[in-house]
Length: 241
Ligand SMILES: NC(=O)c1ccc[n+]([C@@H]2O[C@H](COP(=O)([O-])OP(=O)(O)OC[C@H]3O[C@@H](n4cnc5c(N)ncnc54)[C@H](OP(=O)(O)O)[C@@H]3O)[C@@H](O)[C@H]2O)c1
Image (cartoon, rainbow, N blue to C red):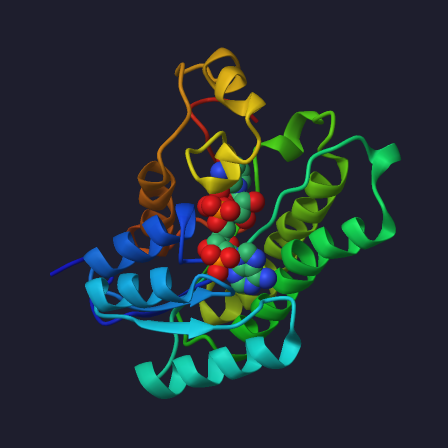
């Protein structure tokens, strides 16, 4: 029996990259998983079929779509135990060059989307539930070109800290996982990262989505019941806090 046998989970942004690996790992541990996506329907449907989950389209920046996803998940799975807020977008460039629209787009998905999903999770999760918010190691040291992206992710880290205290009476743990350089489409879309990753990462390479997923799955397990309000750096030592 897996460590998450009988648990019901939503993973946002699970059609590709880190989210897909998290959905796969949670399912391998026995959870039933809602595979959320916004555009990649075919990839999400294929993953859901493979892991025995359910693909649900919802743009996390849209309140009503988030509410409907949670309602559907609860209805189909009979309740909810785990929410992983992974959906995210990255836009890296000097702050001076950011337009208002670009700022809004990054915050809409990374901050407002995480807010909507944290709020639904806080309202609905069963006792002993788990929330894992995905941030980035880039928030720690300051990153040129990363002001808006990192600011949006910093808000997610604050949701974790406050919610961990608010939900502790229900024994729901809330943690952040901050990946370092991780080989996904997002990583490939920022070509300079391939050179930087081995130089800046103490363990000498970019990470695999599965390596981040293993940390998330552990935080979702009963073994991690004593860990809450933390930001776990999952980046090969990229940031040491
Ligand atoms: N890769 C890295 O090096 C790295 C490092 C640190 C932190 N992170 C964080 O890790 C998370 C996953 O990153 P990744 O590298 O796996 O990204 P990715 O390969 O670009 O995949 C992004 C995922 O998020 C989904 N998504 C985007 N906007 C959405 C929205 N509005 N509503 C619902 N889903 C949405 C995408 O769905 P569709 O396929 O449907 O578009 C996709 O499944 C992000 O929060 C990112 O900021 C990544």
